[in-house]
Image (cartoon, rainbow, N blue to C red; front, top):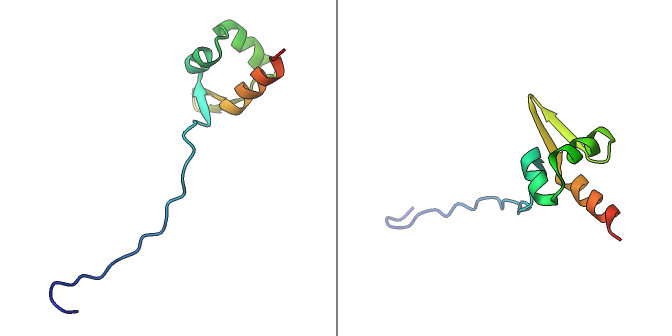
Length: 74
């Protein structure tokens, strides 16, 4: 290759990731929804809010929070 010229390397395109998280912790779910902590735990126990357990962490799916709010709209 002649001096001063460099080979251009094309990198594969990285897919755009969503800005919205897939899951949130309990305190964030409480802030996002305005639902009290105790009521949120009741909804979890009733199966109305989906949770993911990873180790000791309890994560709430944002999709289930959206469904709960949509279902509760009047």
